Length: 430
Image 1: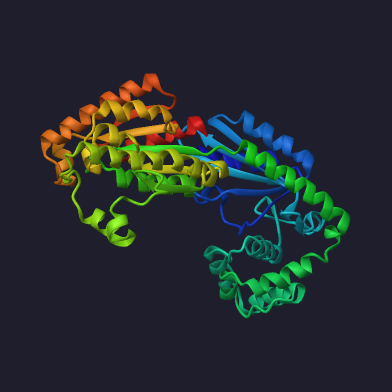
Image 2 (image 1 turned 120 degrees about the vertical axis):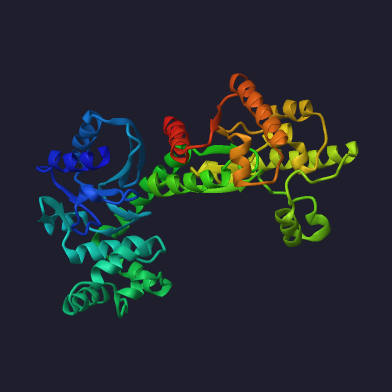
């Protein structure tokens, strides 16, 4: 794997530099979990050496970079589809507070199997502070590691933390759950550290504020939509993409169904939100009997307003903060399959009004032959499946030349092939 080769070669390249691999428990780095990243504490002048290695490594497709206060994130995409995030740190900070002294860490670093790292005591201290300051308990893998140590070692580690930070942890399991009272004690102690004097605190506050401004300015959220008739495999693919983006590519992801939904479904005004949603779930697709033109335009107008207002809400809540928004169905349903929403209006109307709707960066129409779809779901007739598939393909072909963004139809027969195609398009944007 390119990822494993890269990690091994990186530490050979910087072996003579002053660095510390953080949060490491001594396992073989070549076998690091797919979703894990590398946290490397360095002296500022070492970063150029790390960057030079990244730029020269054969097998990298693209590299993303995000610079924040005390850390620079490097997002490395390999040509074989592997991904690795490297966090290069020059300070250990939470907002404007420096929670561990870099000078002390370098003075007390050790070497394990050729890798410069922290003592077991410092690894535990760093992991505890990092997670509690981010209002989270210690991940289970660390709990499992430390509870395998001898009873005396466990007692010593907990006594060290309790004595230094005025905490009251009785065992490692207690550190797995965030505790606000324990955090208060920790912060009170950290604020007394020399590196957090008033002068440094003010300087750190200014630098932290500047980094947040840069992040808001540079962070790019992405909208990805998935369309297809019932049985095309959208739910499975969306679930896979959600896991890949969140665990492998370390992105924040939210899944929305069909529309922004700042307005409730129309039936909620009659039945209440909970009952209306349950009725919608229980109802088979395309079973609406509405043929009234006025009623159809009202329904379409109501949902169209949801798109117009909702796209502003989604931009402010998710895209501005760098989220990837996955839509399970999108506005295209109103153009091709209005009957699904109990709407009967000319498709030209809804198609024309798409000009004012948010144009997602990536749009995928998943399809398969009628026989394959009917094996998955027996909700539509073969003729309806073929009719809707043809119309969607025509629409995506038209929009690919008319609007910004990717409009791609994918025959969803081979799950891994489908995922590979989608991720490749995502990587081009990342």
